Image (cartoon, rainbow, N blue to C red; front, side, top):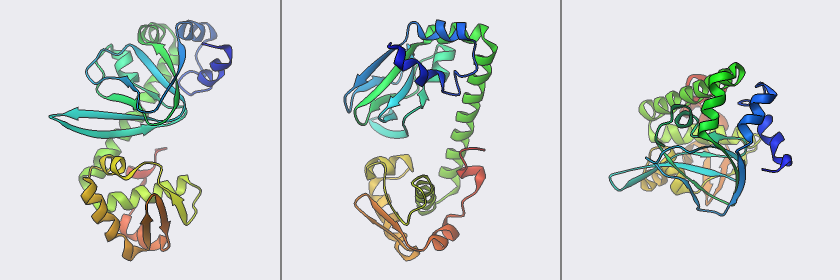
Length: 232
Protein backbone atom coordinates (compact mmCIF):
# COMPACT_ATOMS: atom_id res chain seq x y z
CA UNK A 1 0.00 0.00 0.00
CA UNK A 2 1.33 3.43 -0.95
CA UNK A 3 1.99 6.07 1.69
CA UNK A 4 -0.53 8.31 -0.06
CA UNK A 5 -3.28 5.78 0.72
CA UNK A 6 -2.73 5.87 4.48
CA UNK A 7 -4.49 9.21 5.25
CA UNK A 8 -7.69 7.88 3.63
CA UNK A 9 -7.76 5.13 6.26
CA UNK A 10 -6.50 7.13 9.23
CA UNK A 11 -9.19 9.79 8.82
CA UNK A 12 -12.06 7.33 9.12
CA UNK A 13 -13.86 7.28 12.51
CA UNK A 14 -12.96 3.60 12.91
CA UNK A 15 -9.22 4.37 12.94
CA UNK A 16 -8.67 8.03 13.81
CA UNK A 17 -8.31 7.67 17.61
CA UNK A 18 -6.21 4.52 17.85
CA UNK A 19 -2.55 4.60 18.86
CA UNK A 20 -0.06 5.23 16.08
CA UNK A 21 1.77 2.00 16.87
CA UNK A 22 -1.46 0.02 16.59
CA UNK A 23 -2.40 1.75 13.36
CA UNK A 24 0.98 0.93 11.85
CA UNK A 25 0.54 -2.71 12.83
CA UNK A 26 -2.95 -2.75 11.38
CA UNK A 27 -2.05 -1.39 7.94
CA UNK A 28 1.34 -2.98 7.38
CA UNK A 29 -0.32 -6.02 5.79
CA UNK A 30 -3.01 -4.04 3.99
CA UNK A 31 -3.12 -3.35 0.31
CA UNK A 32 -5.15 -1.35 -2.19
CA UNK A 33 -6.60 -2.71 -5.39
CA UNK A 34 -8.56 -1.27 -8.29
CA UNK A 35 -11.46 -3.45 -9.41
CA UNK A 36 -13.50 -3.27 -12.61
CA UNK A 37 -17.32 -3.11 -12.53
CA UNK A 38 -19.24 -6.25 -11.56
CA UNK A 39 -16.24 -7.86 -9.85
CA UNK A 40 -17.06 -10.21 -6.98
CA UNK A 41 -15.08 -9.19 -3.89
CA UNK A 42 -16.38 -11.65 -1.29
CA UNK A 43 -18.76 -14.61 -1.37
CA UNK A 44 -21.58 -15.31 1.08
CA UNK A 45 -20.63 -18.23 3.33
CA UNK A 46 -16.88 -17.99 2.72
CA UNK A 47 -14.47 -17.24 5.60
CA UNK A 48 -13.82 -13.54 6.20
CA UNK A 49 -10.20 -12.87 5.24
CA UNK A 50 -10.20 -9.08 5.03
CA UNK A 51 -11.89 -5.96 6.33
CA UNK A 52 -12.76 -3.91 3.24
CA UNK A 53 -12.84 -0.12 2.88
CA UNK A 54 -14.31 1.58 -0.19
CA UNK A 55 -11.99 4.40 -1.29
CA UNK A 56 -13.66 5.25 -4.61
CA UNK A 57 -16.62 3.83 -6.52
CA UNK A 58 -19.53 1.80 -5.16
CA UNK A 59 -20.05 -1.73 -3.87
CA UNK A 60 -23.27 -3.72 -3.67
CA UNK A 61 -23.83 -6.06 -0.72
CA UNK A 62 -26.21 -8.87 -1.65
CA UNK A 63 -27.56 -12.16 -0.36
CA UNK A 64 -28.88 -15.33 -1.96
CA UNK A 65 -31.27 -18.08 -0.89
CA UNK A 66 -33.11 -20.77 -2.83
CA UNK A 67 -32.26 -19.26 -6.24
CA UNK A 68 -33.34 -15.81 -5.08
CA UNK A 69 -31.08 -12.79 -4.82
CA UNK A 70 -31.60 -9.49 -3.04
CA UNK A 71 -29.61 -6.29 -2.66
CA UNK A 72 -29.00 -5.53 1.01
CA UNK A 73 -27.37 -2.12 0.60
CA UNK A 74 -25.01 -0.11 -1.59
CA UNK A 75 -21.81 1.31 -0.11
CA UNK A 76 -19.83 4.29 -1.33
CA UNK A 77 -16.66 6.21 -0.49
CA UNK A 78 -15.47 5.77 3.11
CA UNK A 79 -17.68 2.80 3.94
CA UNK A 80 -16.28 -0.32 5.58
CA UNK A 81 -17.86 -3.73 5.27
CA UNK A 82 -17.71 -7.19 6.82
CA UNK A 83 -16.44 -5.70 10.11
CA UNK A 84 -18.54 -8.02 12.30
CA UNK A 85 -17.34 -11.11 10.44
CA UNK A 86 -13.74 -9.91 10.72
CA UNK A 87 -14.00 -9.40 14.48
CA UNK A 88 -15.79 -12.72 15.09
CA UNK A 89 -13.72 -14.73 12.60
CA UNK A 90 -17.04 -15.84 11.14
CA UNK A 91 -18.30 -16.58 7.61
CA UNK A 92 -19.51 -13.74 5.41
CA UNK A 93 -23.26 -13.29 5.70
CA UNK A 94 -23.36 -11.39 2.39
CA UNK A 95 -21.57 -11.30 -0.92
CA UNK A 96 -20.10 -8.09 -2.32
CA UNK A 97 -19.45 -6.91 -5.88
CA UNK A 98 -18.49 -3.65 -7.48
CA UNK A 99 -21.11 -1.64 -9.36
CA UNK A 100 -18.52 0.51 -11.12
CA UNK A 101 -14.77 0.82 -11.25
CA UNK A 102 -13.83 0.92 -7.56
CA UNK A 103 -10.76 1.28 -5.40
CA UNK A 104 -10.82 -0.83 -2.24
CA UNK A 105 -8.45 -1.14 0.72
CA UNK A 106 -8.23 -4.60 2.28
CA UNK A 107 -6.90 -5.14 5.80
CA UNK A 108 -6.24 -8.75 6.93
CA UNK A 109 -8.96 -9.84 9.36
CA UNK A 110 -6.43 -11.50 11.66
CA UNK A 111 -4.65 -8.15 12.08
CA UNK A 112 -7.97 -6.45 12.84
CA UNK A 113 -8.65 -9.00 15.60
CA UNK A 114 -5.14 -8.71 17.04
CA UNK A 115 -5.29 -4.92 17.30
CA UNK A 116 -8.87 -5.05 18.63
CA UNK A 117 -7.63 -7.11 21.59
CA UNK A 118 -5.04 -4.60 22.72
CA UNK A 119 -5.97 -1.10 21.52
CA UNK A 120 -8.85 0.24 23.62
CA UNK A 121 -9.53 3.24 21.40
CA UNK A 122 -9.85 1.01 18.36
CA UNK A 123 -12.06 -1.42 20.29
CA UNK A 124 -14.37 1.45 21.30
CA UNK A 125 -14.53 2.63 17.68
CA UNK A 126 -15.42 -0.89 16.54
CA UNK A 127 -18.22 -1.07 19.12
CA UNK A 128 -19.56 2.31 17.99
CA UNK A 129 -19.44 1.27 14.32
CA UNK A 130 -21.22 -2.02 15.01
CA UNK A 131 -23.82 -0.23 17.17
CA UNK A 132 -24.44 2.21 14.32
CA UNK A 133 -24.86 -0.68 11.87
CA UNK A 134 -27.15 -2.58 14.26
CA UNK A 135 -29.44 0.42 14.67
CA UNK A 136 -29.45 0.84 10.89
CA UNK A 137 -30.60 -2.76 10.50
CA UNK A 138 -33.39 -2.25 13.07
CA UNK A 139 -34.60 0.87 11.25
CA UNK A 140 -34.56 -1.01 7.96
CA UNK A 141 -36.61 -3.87 9.38
CA UNK A 142 -39.10 -1.42 10.90
CA UNK A 143 -39.53 0.24 7.52
CA UNK A 144 -40.12 -3.10 5.79
CA UNK A 145 -42.57 -4.39 8.40
CA UNK A 146 -44.50 -1.22 9.24
CA UNK A 147 -44.74 0.63 5.93
CA UNK A 148 -46.51 -0.11 2.68
CA UNK A 149 -44.49 -0.25 -0.54
CA UNK A 150 -45.69 3.25 -1.48
CA UNK A 151 -44.65 4.65 1.92
CA UNK A 152 -41.22 3.01 1.64
CA UNK A 153 -40.65 4.51 -1.79
CA UNK A 154 -41.86 7.94 -0.67
CA UNK A 155 -39.49 8.01 2.28
CA UNK A 156 -36.59 6.77 0.14
CA UNK A 157 -37.16 9.60 -2.33
CA UNK A 158 -37.38 12.22 0.43
CA UNK A 159 -34.06 11.03 1.92
CA UNK A 160 -32.42 10.96 -1.50
CA UNK A 161 -33.71 14.45 -2.29
CA UNK A 162 -32.21 15.76 0.95
CA UNK A 163 -28.91 14.02 0.20
CA UNK A 164 -28.88 15.60 -3.26
CA UNK A 165 -29.21 19.10 -1.82
CA UNK A 166 -32.98 19.50 -1.67
CA UNK A 167 -33.54 20.27 -5.36
CA UNK A 168 -37.00 19.67 -6.83
CA UNK A 169 -35.40 17.54 -9.56
CA UNK A 170 -32.66 14.98 -8.92
CA UNK A 171 -31.34 11.67 -10.19
CA UNK A 172 -31.80 8.16 -8.82
CA UNK A 173 -28.44 6.84 -7.68
CA UNK A 174 -29.28 3.18 -8.45
CA UNK A 175 -31.07 1.42 -11.26
CA UNK A 176 -34.72 0.59 -10.62
CA UNK A 177 -34.17 -3.17 -10.36
CA UNK A 178 -31.76 -2.66 -7.45
CA UNK A 179 -33.97 0.01 -5.92
CA UNK A 180 -36.87 -2.44 -5.87
CA UNK A 181 -34.68 -5.01 -4.13
CA UNK A 182 -33.46 -2.52 -1.53
CA UNK A 183 -37.05 -1.52 -0.76
CA UNK A 184 -38.25 -5.12 -0.52
CA UNK A 185 -40.34 -5.04 -3.70
CA UNK A 186 -40.52 -6.76 -7.03
CA UNK A 187 -39.85 -4.56 -10.08
CA UNK A 188 -43.57 -4.79 -10.89
CA UNK A 189 -44.52 -3.55 -7.41
CA UNK A 190 -42.06 -0.68 -7.77
CA UNK A 191 -43.66 0.34 -11.06
CA UNK A 192 -47.08 0.37 -9.40
CA UNK A 193 -45.74 2.39 -6.46
CA UNK A 194 -44.22 4.95 -8.83
CA UNK A 195 -47.59 5.39 -10.54
CA UNK A 196 -49.35 5.66 -7.17
CA UNK A 197 -47.11 8.62 -6.23
CA UNK A 198 -48.14 10.72 -9.23
CA UNK A 199 -51.13 12.31 -7.45
CA UNK A 200 -48.66 13.47 -4.79
CA UNK A 201 -46.61 15.42 -7.32
CA UNK A 202 -43.90 12.81 -7.91
CA UNK A 203 -42.77 12.10 -11.47
CA UNK A 204 -40.08 9.52 -12.27
CA UNK A 205 -38.91 9.39 -15.87
CA UNK A 206 -36.05 6.94 -16.31
CA UNK A 207 -33.69 7.87 -13.49
CA UNK A 208 -34.87 11.47 -13.26
CA UNK A 209 -37.10 12.30 -10.28
CA UNK A 210 -39.22 15.42 -9.78
CA UNK A 211 -41.03 16.19 -6.52
CA UNK A 212 -43.42 19.06 -7.24
CA UNK A 213 -45.57 18.80 -4.10
CA UNK A 214 -43.09 18.15 -1.26
CA UNK A 215 -45.64 18.73 1.48
CA UNK A 216 -48.07 16.24 -0.06
CA UNK A 217 -45.49 13.48 -0.24
CA UNK A 218 -44.33 14.21 3.32
CA UNK A 219 -47.91 13.81 4.55
CA UNK A 220 -48.02 10.43 2.82
CA UNK A 221 -44.55 9.29 3.93
CA UNK A 222 -44.75 10.44 7.57
CA UNK A 223 -40.95 10.34 8.05
CA UNK A 224 -39.73 9.77 11.59
CA UNK A 225 -36.20 9.93 13.05
CA UNK A 226 -36.80 6.52 14.66
CA UNK A 227 -36.70 5.01 11.17
CA UNK A 228 -35.31 7.61 8.78
CA UNK A 229 -32.58 9.57 10.58
CA UNK A 230 -29.21 7.85 9.99
CA UNK A 231 -27.57 9.92 12.74
CA UNK A 232 -29.73 8.70 15.62
